[in-house]
Structure formats: C-alpha cells, structure tokens
Length: 384
Image 1 (cartoon, rainbow, N blue to C red):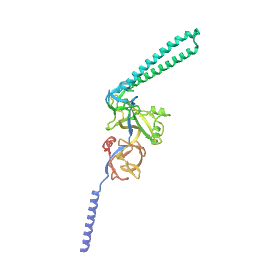
Image 2: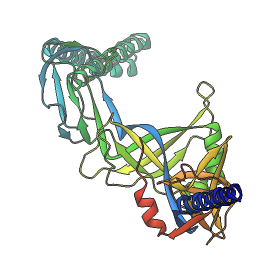
Image 3: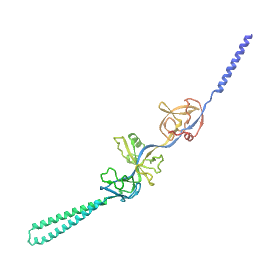
Image 4: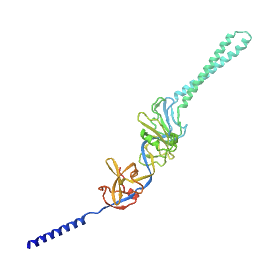
C-alpha cells in the first residue's frame, strides 16, 4: 500500500512538472513579428543616364598670323570679350614699309615709262598716216607701250600685295567672342606655318556639349523616341541637363540638335551634340562635365528598393497574403531614385513588405503594420 501511494505521488509530480514546462514553453514562444507593409503604386518616374562631355563654344576660331614677323604689341588679355574685326596683335612692319616704299617707287618709274612710250606712239601715228615712215616703226613703239603698261600693272600689283601684308600685320578677331589662352607675347617670331595659333576666340553665347552612345545604347535610345525618321525623333527628344565639374547642375536645360547617325569604326560609338544657352558666360570653351540624358517612365509600377532582395540572380519581394509573407519574383526594368521599376510580378494595390527583410522567410506569419509608400522611400539611405 505504501509503495502504491509513492507511485501515485511521483506520477502526480511528473504530470505537474510536465504541465508547467509546457505552459512555460507556450508563454515563451514568440508571436508573428511586425513588418511595415505598403501598397504597390504606379508613378511617373524620371531618371538620368550620364555621359562625359566636353564643352565647346558655338564658334571657336583659331587666330593665326597671315605673315611672318615679330609680335610688337598684344592689344587684349586672356578672357577679354572682343568684336569681329577688333585688333588683337600687331606684328613688326619695318621691312614691309621699306618694301612698300620700293613698290611705290617702282610704280612711279613704270608710269614714267608708259608716258614716254605713249608720247612716242602719238608722234609716230601721223607720220605713218602720211607715209613718211613705215608701219613697222609704229608697231615697235606700240609694243613698247604695251610692255610699259604691263610693267605698270605688275608694279601696282606688287604694291597692293605689300600694303595687304602691312594690313595683315594687324591681327584681328575673326568673330565676336572671348579670347582664350595667349601663348605668345611681345618679341616672339610668328608665322602662318606655326602649329599653335596666336589664340582662340570663341563665341560662347551658346555652347555645344558633345557626347557619345555605344551602338546598343544608340538603338535603344531611338527606339523609345517618337517619330518615324531621325529628323522626327530629334524634334521629340526631351531636354537634357549638364552637370558641371563641381557636381552642380547647370541652370539652363539643353536640346539635342544633331546625331551623327554613323558608327565610328574605331570606337563603335555615335556622337550627339546638345546646345545650351550661356547668357551669363558661365561656361567656357574647353569645360568638361557630365551630360544627363533623361529616361522617362510613365504610369509604371514601382516598389521601394528596400522591399527587394536577390536570390540566384532573380529579384523578389514579399507579398502579404492572409498575414503571411510570400516570396514573389518580379522583373525589374530599372532602378531610379531608390525605386525599382517593375515590369511584372506584382499588381497595383497589392500589399508587399516594405523594409526589414533580413531574416524573413517565405511562409512566415507576420503582423502587418500599414505604412505610407513615401515614408518607406524616404527612410532608405542612399549608398554611393
């Protein structure tokens, strides 16, 4: 009887301990964790593809000497705003002046010879008419007159050439614009054959920004632009932006004006040219920067970057079905401004988990916490 009571007592204690242990386990088991949930919206999204660019003035004219000579004066400084025809340099003209004096004297001599020959002809004409002398003498005199006139013409041409060279000694600006670097100063001997120009004058009231696309980018770019011909597509191209070397975006938007349309066989690229207004002369010939080509998406499905994860090269989000996370594959066509643009995989209004995917697994129960889409996107930290 005693052993029976002990057995019952031990059994009761075991049941009590087991019951308490099970109760403790039930109390300690965590419930579904809370996750921020957003609805998938559609938005208009604009991103930018960037390309290195070099800025050139709309007109960039190299200034060269037309004659050889030493620089006597430099009338302008680098960065000066000049007008077309304005003197920039004066070359030494001492030798040219001497040549001009000699050419002028040659004209006077030739003119005197013409006068003498003309008088001789005038004297012989009546004598021939009266038969006093033969016609041969008159023809010889007329030939001498023609030769004298030819020498006069040559002397005048020589004088004109010398005076033109004297005028070329004043080197003038070929266009309105801004003077670039001046590598030569007073006393430097310059000539038309110099490989380096005296300076460059650039009209940069408007500037050109040149950039290139590879062959694939070129065709993808044209495919998304309205128009049946290259000319039509140019008319429908969106405005472009220019990021300066300091990272700031230039205040004026530009317009793509030309596309070469030919693939450079050496680089496999196509060159495009954008025009920007430059009213404040902020941009200068030779500046570098980054051209920002807009990539516009209209009424597209978007999800926050923080809502996506990758697995074996595929992109997924967690959709929420009956408070359960479900891994759902999506096709992402672009990523812009911390948004993933989705082609397929989710629908507008469908609920997805917006952030904190770290240890989440498909099929896990969750506690949905509704959150505004914009708030989720604002909380995403940019990475560089």
